[in-house]
Image 1 (cartoon, one colour):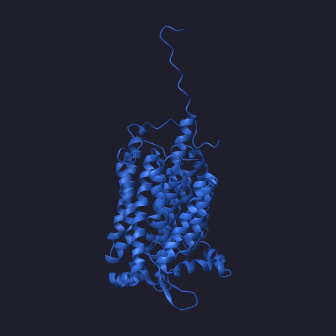
Image 2 (spheres, helix red, strand yellow; image 1 turned 120 degrees about the horizontal axis):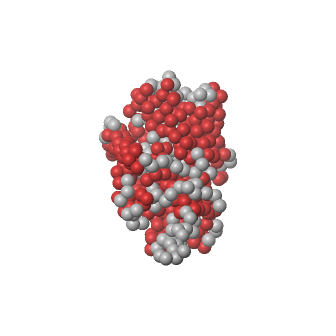
Image 3 (spheres, rainbow, N blue to C red; image 1 turned 135 degrees about the horizontal axis):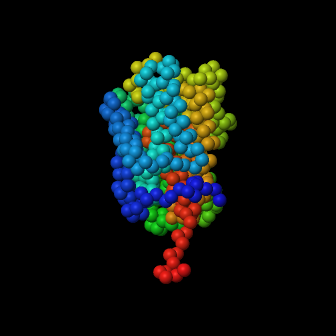
Length: 468
């Protein structure tokens, strides 16, 4: 049996007073949980606000809530003198991922504001992983976060579908700022006709982050629907959300997320093996695609078909970020500097720079190579090969326990998103980066607590008075 903690670790006394309900987030580390949840909520609607209010306020809402959570977390660590522990060298790896990019502030490759924005994209979100390793006390608290994400996914899915039905006129109705910010990313060419189609982006800047959020929702809902320890009405309700989220992906026209979700569902099947309940998800997905075909008149589904029928397109799609990374590693092995891909850099700053200043690339692997060079590629290798390897072990530890629903949803999400770094940026955007890192740390924490409780020696019975 793989262990996540040494036998000398005691069971934390901070679990006292918890009720095993989602409201436990208000019984322990309240400011930390409120700050993280507030940051996730503000991050989900950040782009919606930015379309309507220029300036730093939309960024300040999400970042400010997260900074509040970090400050409260540091305070509780100092008061409790509680160590940050994790399997293997996990905390050290995360700290390295946070601190190493900070040295690139000395790199003269970009203006200071661009470097600071790029550093935020690298170093801010991994802190959520360290926080989860200390503030998550039971599965009920993590269920509160899963419930929050599912609520946000439902809202953004409905809004995205309505947005698609309204068409591109909805962008013009918001104003010139929205038209300039979203640009050509919300359009696509329909086959060889030369005509353009509209892609929904919901409350996000581009269609891809919207689709990624839908992917998170599908995997989390699948975990609950297939779990044996949740009430049947809850399982049916979450299963009913899956077609809605699939429709969200459909109207976004994002092909990469479809690949990512299919991979995540394979991970679910790997953990649970093939069951009748999993096979029932197939008609659920077919219903989603059927309604998606009706809503989009088949146009976006035809866009998905190009991945299969157009020779070499899928391989080109997957290889493009790797080719970009290889090209810049050969020319600038130490990178161009923080923020040079424009990922995480506010629109006001990017629009003020020359048109060819930023190197736009898909995937975190492209961002790592362009901004940090070989150092960035090594950091991503730490994440994929040094950290993700613990997630399947954690999932196996929690299977068959009262935390099985959490494991079935969170573990595939974390694994699939990490693989997605080839063609996406799950680690650098809001709220995805916060969600990914927090879920990563939370799942490890639950597995460690499970192993620690199993390793505790049984209390010897007390001898009756007078016995010798």
